[in-house]
Length: 69
Image: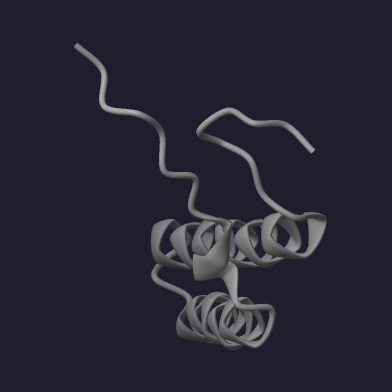
C-alpha cells in the first residue's frame, strides 16, 4: 500500500467513486431542465455511497504525516 497522503483501501475508493458518480448524475439532472427524477437518482447514489463509506470505515484510511516545515 502506498504511504502518501492519498493512501486508501480499494473499498474506500469504491465508496468515493459511487459518491462522485452520484454528484455527476445529480448535476446532469439539474442542467437538463431540471429533471428531478435524474437529480433524485443522483442524490440516492450519494446517499448509498455515504452509507457504504461508513460501512467500510473510510475514516480509518487517514494518513497522519509528520508536520512539514
